[in-house]
Image 1 (cartoon, rainbow, N blue to C red):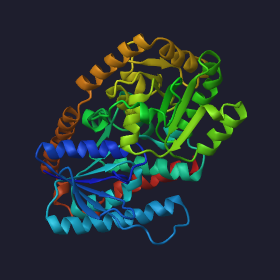
Image 2 (cartoon, rainbow, N blue to C red):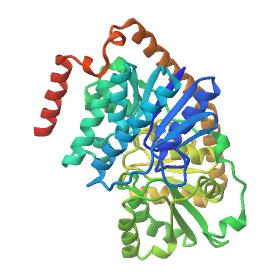
Image 3 (cartoon, helix red, strand yellow):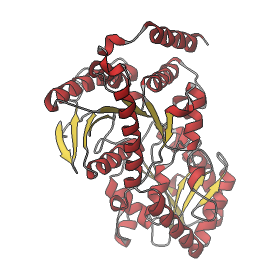
Image 4 (cartoon, rainbow, N blue to C red):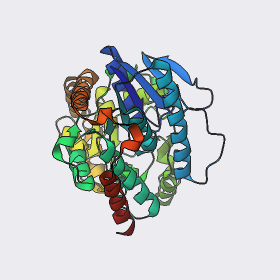
Length: 421
């Protein structure tokens, strides 16, 4: 099978869990004998074409023109993605289907779907409504509309959890048989690291315990809740250091909050860290904490578990579906600094129990979240879609001009309703 996959990020260009998801899924599909072609954005000093672990990666050239705003920049990127897609299809001659990931690549996937008359599968990793707990401005409304449009154009919509399945069905009014739940996973081989006292001393003193967070620095990840919990933790365990790794627009707010609470000297904001550094930090941390307010799945919790690091997570979204309190991790209510502090302190004060919890978490990830199994489930979706596609009349149409007036009217009515509601 020739699979054309679109993602706005792919390692080494990585902003969050989406890049790792697309990489691990693609490599697992390749290992099963399929051809996966990734169309993604490029960056300086990265080859525009290369093969990484069998996956054929095609990257756009860096945009030379400054856009007026973020949305315009994404439109520019989609023009480039279409250009790369046409170049690739002309080169290889045939693809079986298109698989898009999140709204940022929607326009390019839609154009190629209709131009090539090939079925489109879409994975919705998160929604704008969920990230913001509502839609409050024009940009959010535009992104929300594109997410709906992507689910409208898709033959199947893949989501990562029961929580997201309910969200997209309710938010975009999707029929039950259009949405398929396939979880995220982790590849244990990508997270191996040896314990190193020398490395640990870069972040903490020998007598300090380490609490670790890694991920995007955005409000919905709840890092501000962790900072609110720190004074209570320090009152009981004063020799604790908090290492917060990642980048994002909320960083200055968090630093100001830490200064206000007088705990800035107990927090190490590392900025972006490489995969190798991330793995070593997991290995030397006493606790990994993910206090999300909104979390469609929570792949970072799986990462911590596969490194045998005990985790504390908010009982929200996908996290609530695989982290069981006091069994393979600790769970607390969302936006509860007191409860978060109590859970972290429990693991810091009970290292033997923390180790047992971490071991159970490791076994759960190893047994239930294999990328081979996830790739098999994804292939099943591909095959069902291709069977339906072969039986349909659409594959005999004329591409992008084949959209009928009913579909156009439906889209117009939906967008107008969203605009003025």
